Length: 189
Image (cartoon, rainbow, N blue to C red):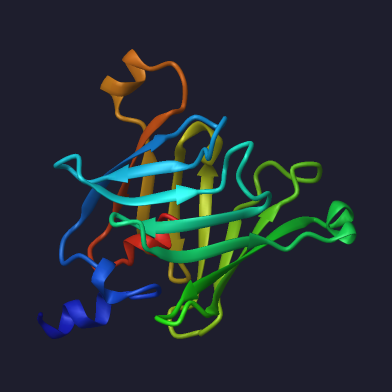
């Protein structure tokens, strides 16, 4: 790996998930009845990540990002407080797991409280300031948004392929293009 690539590599969860080239992943939403969540596949339709906890029976306000083998990579918890209902933002905290199963705080995601703002970007701040902060711009519910770093550099783009949009009327399938050197596990959080 050359020096330029080393400078552009952004491991947040692990450098294992940083590719030397752009990667396009397909995301499929699972039914909400049981566990809900998402399944993420590569171009060869291999499951590379899954997200659990979005369903009716899942633990409320908690998501788990897993690798393709089912190992937990990130635990994401909503910081729920009574005061949050009156706040301008809702907060989520992301934690990695170490080999002993302990949690280590990695990032905080602040999303605007929908009662107060529709066009305010979602902000992600890392616990370590080595990579700066990130913003999610656009409309995620309609699968049309981008993630940029603190310098404004695009690190990921979320969208729906035209062919899929014509066949599927729902929002169950979309793709995420992740730029080279960017931690795919972090983007999919």
